[in-house]
Structure formats: C-alpha cells, structure tokens
Length: 221
Image 1 (tube, rainbow, N blue to C red):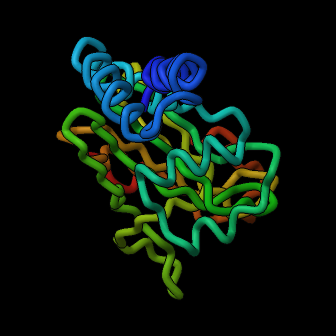
Image 2: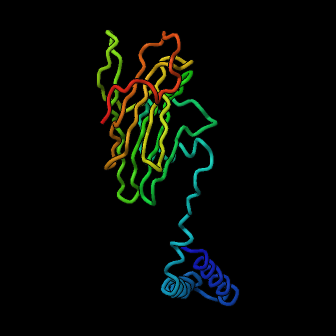
Image 3: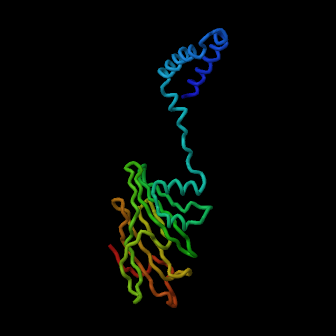
C-alpha cells in the first residue's frame, strides 16, 4: 500500500468516526464499505504509487569491502581466493571498462613480498557473460628448461592497458629483479591470447639486464 493510499484510509476512518461512529450501530461495517470504495478508486487512478514507494534504490558500493563484495556477486571467484585476501584498505579489484558493455577485471587473491596472485575476468554486462581467463604461460622445470603450462591464476604483477587491450605479467625470480619472465597477452574474442613470452632464468649474471622488455624471447606469435 502506498503512503497516499494509507492516508486516504486514515482520513476516511477519522471522518467517519467523528461524524457517524458514535451514533451508528454498525460503524465497522459501514467503514469497510465506504473506505473500501475510496481505496479502490485511489488504486485505480494511482496504480504506480505502490511500486514507487516500495522500491528502494540501491546505493553504489562505497567502501573497499563493499566494492569487492559487489564484484564477487557478479564474477563469483573462489572461496580460496577470497579467504586469502586480507587487506581492508584496498579492494584488490582493478576494473577496466572497455565500452558500455565490456569490462576486464583483475582480482587480487593474495600479495607476497614483491608480487601477487591474480585472477582475471572478462565481463559483458549486457550479454551477462562472465569468463574466467586461462593463460598459457611457461614454467621452469627441474632441469632449468621452460615448459608450457596453463593457469587461471597469474603470479607476478599483471597490468592491463585498455587502449591496446594488452595484459602484461612480470614475474620476478627475486625482489631485486634482473631475472624472471614477462608474458604479453592480447584480448581477442573475449579471451586473452599469448603473443610473446620473454624470460631470463639466470639470476647470477654479473651485469643482469634489469629491463624485462629486453630479456630473451622464448616464444612469439
């Protein structure tokens, strides 16, 4: 019932009791008949009022926790990722809006000394498409050879450039840098595709190359 409809019934009842209630043998019955007519007429000419007053607009998320919780209801990342996130000062959610419909969202699950674990999602809000991303990468095996692998959790420091739809992930083998890997991915048809992978496995060089963009190319497409 809307506010105006309730007010109409209250006024009807008050007027009835003041003028007739004390003298009528059936005040309740007459009230129901007269005021019922008032209610039906009010509802007929103001059908939208109930919906307007009952609908409470949702306010946008304000705090870091609210923002993270809001995006989790959309993307549904794992309980393991969420339980590992301990920061209360930052959202751990990096949102890039590509256009009116499309988003790329980087969700930090945990942070170590100099790098972090990040889940990446493609989201189309019009089509209601949520795509957790799988990344082709390369890992060092026991014989110090690089072998291909697939992961849904990037370890390193991934960044996304929405102007070029390019994601780069720098994974360091030590905090001082000079060795590690650099993967470059392009968003194509809602998925990230590996375009180049560079790596410097030797961390004991006398004069290590600090700039990862100059490390040896292992794979290029």
